[in-house]
Length: 114
Length: 113
Image (tube, rainbow over all chains, first blue to last red; front, side, top):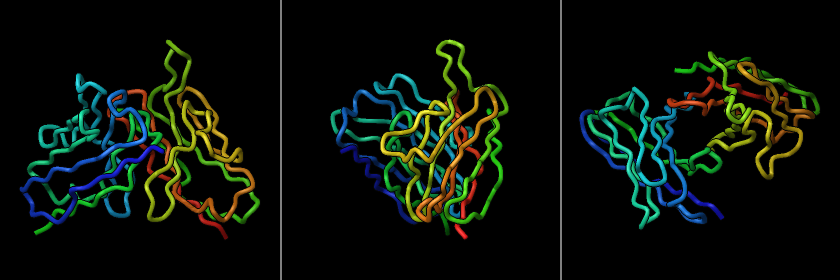
């Protein structure tokens, strides 16, 4: 059974940093690209980053480019999202999902507030 | 960026009725190399993460009931839910995965009368 479990969310102050993790199981993680998607409270879905299976290519939404970094460790079946210079508008539920969005994790909440 | 315009934003129907949700993209999602439309539909129930219903515009994900039907090509797409059931209460999103940034429609909230 495919499982994706995000962690690392929390309440942080504007300007601070946070690193999210997504642990994968039930499939060969190293064969698949992975995405991060976020959803602000009561709002729609926003794709924010994609990483290829071998980390050879990374793509970002303009809203996070230069502040967020997607990475992965295939030996640990884990996907990461390093978030710097956090702003109030980054407050959202953050989901990881497989390359073609066929499986999603339950999400981890990030709140940026003073 | 490809803009996805979804309508209506909400609708309320009685159980057993048929529902149609529309999604229009600002550019064609049909890739000539494989003749596939890079369009997906998702269902998000309250308090849950999104669930993939339809990919390649019309292919149902495994386990999705056959009352969910995706259609369309190019820039105009439709999700039809026939014989709506109470459990279909959710927000439905379309999404293009033709090119980054992958973009979603604004969602359609389905309520059951």
